[in-house]
Image (cartoon, rainbow, N blue to C red; front, side):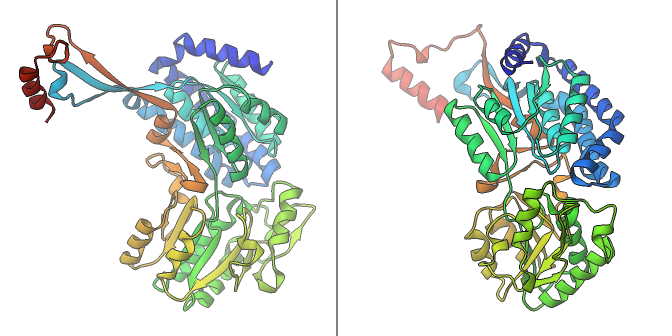
Length: 457
């Protein structure tokens, strides 16, 4: 079906008012939940084909989280969609003031390849809950999952309500040249800039979920063995292709050697002595990204790993020690299984180091010093993060997820997701049984002045 036809049908369907009913939204969310449950085996198979993910990881990090978000929204949608009465100043007597969440209309959701199912379905769930129609554009780099998303959505919904557009740059460009009421994009900073340029032309509101070099701070008070265990889990999950993975470790020089040894030990424990033979270890999405990652590895600084297999597109979990800011691996977001270790001598140095660079999507600190933890969370600007853990802060619908500055704008998940896809109208309902005269001309300056001061002070 032609894109212009889909857009016109979706606009007509939205303006029919059908999506405004909370009962309709609930029905659609339940339909989506059932479809995801039904297709769990196919979802795992598609993710295995695109990224080499194991069935366990596919459920833990994609379909399971999608089901959790849909279930959460089903439970809370009535409360989120309800109007909220707010205080009315006496100057507006007699009236009632309230805030009413309303859908934007026709929205565009552009999702990435690294978590292709989750990052398509979660924002779609929020968009449906808020009462919108939507076009979903999954990534061309994860074709098996994109095809399955198209299949699932076509089973659940008519194109006049929810549609999927597949393809690559040509289709992305065509979509961005169309007028939507709202755009939600997850992906790289470079493409995010292009999205924002296009939406600025039509003054279309947009949310950008981007990335960046997310630091992981380890001070001398940290529980080193536990820190290493959790860092290895978060860094090498999905073969390092996670937007909130620890990009680099910034470690107290006094405990650096101990931490490096613990990380190497954990790589062996979690992935085995031959990780490329581990059936649960994924692969890089394509040759282009594989080649880019291999070019970032300085073999003289490799402590463990460093080797890749261009046929299977796999790179060993790699640790690089004695890294400096001038190394190639620190010049861009890594987005792969390479972990650079940098050090500091004074804890106060970390603030200048991190705040002097682009604001990261995530930040992690391993420490037992509550004052240091407090200073990091208050003095450094970043999207979100964990204390004494990594990555898992995004696995809850009770907290919004998003970036700040160069790592993105806006957030979603749970209530934040509902609000992101809604415009909140401010409405004053003025009663007709009384009409105070003081605002009308001709003004009686003596009487009106006293009344105005009484009401507004």
